[in-house]
Image 1 (cartoon, rainbow, N blue to C red):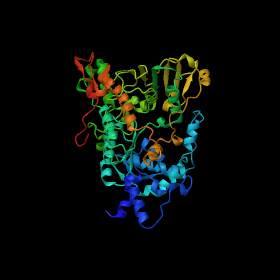
Image 2 (spheres, rainbow, N blue to C red; image 1 turned 180 degrees about the vertical axis):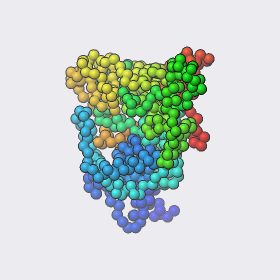
Image 3 (tube, rainbow, N blue to C red; image 1 turned 30 degrees about the horizontal axis):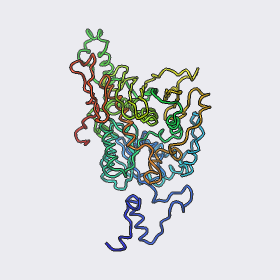
Image 4 (cartoon, helix red, strand yellow; image 1 turned 60 degrees about the vertical axis):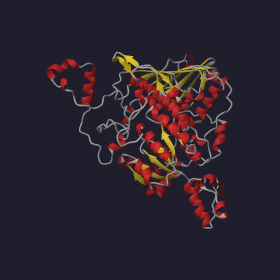
Length: 541
């Protein structure tokens, strides 16, 4: 090595991605000057500061996530359904040519805290309209398209970070493959499909501390959510021993409580004997038969790639698009969908850790699609000087008893959180917004808590991930935290599938009891079978 070589830093010591390091080295070698961002002026971004991003699963939340990072360099799209991908691109084209829309939310937003205002000064707010226009003109024509993420990772060498917004069952497989290649990952909630996958992702993140990981529960970056954390941790309502969390999902957004399409069994085909069989399983079988039809996925959808690690099932439009969320093979129902936006806040502020007892009760559950409504009871042990906590989850329109402190007001119909402490009560809405000591008179007289959490500039969860990749911010919801929250959510699903109360040893990731019921009295069901599953042949775990 020459003395000149010794004087040149490598990419790691320079704090750059390999792409940026090579670019800057080449430019410097050509005798050109690197222009830092601050020289360009406020709101401008040096090209060498951009992050190369690929999105896997573009048409749903992936479109929102991609839109939030269009100030960066989007280099690849991967989607098993090119029809949905093309439709999303067409909508972007229309949005780019239309007048900028205004935020029409009816929710009364709190005034930002002083900490949030200070954080907002650290980076200009994203100009979504300008970013979209630049994306359409400069990036979209160059974007590579793939159906199979494995092909994308093999061929597309310029990717720095990957957004994973596929159905739940593919989150872990894609994130793991990306992390193995050193890619930063932003993964939609729920982080994964099984408890074992949660542990795998936690281990992977620990092994690769330089990889920036984020779960897509955007409420974790909200100013109001962090204020709620500060109210609870400051002792504003004393010791919390009881929490109630509810959501109105599925609310018709996707089907639940329906059987898998299947032909009518022979025993129900004889009209002379079938009329008396409209009960129990026979009703389920008739509903399943009513859904049978001659459906094909078409040329735009690769159904085999959609299935991925999951068991083989014939295509049906009741599964895709989006309806997958209510089916056990691919989604995690209302608890998996909204738990990361609701359970997140008590799990965070009360430092709950893993529960020791979990029991889910529900409307009828056929094992294929999630029930119409569930209630899950969690028991968390004492932590240090913090008392044990009982947390109850409600979905499908079920709610906790209304606290007397809100008078004639109804509980928020979308969902919320009710904390019951030794000195009072507090509520938050979905995403942790509107933290509110009860009653309102007590809230008004309660001092604002001291700021203990940093604020995310403009509450931008996706840009927080980008800024963390660039070394400019601390990450908001890394896998270290997100895997534990996800595991708590998934344990409710484990109890549902097992059919009763489970006793959990979190340290060893095992259920210590078997579940017996009227339907399984021969030794009971071992719930540990629901902590993981074997991937389909051809897919690695």
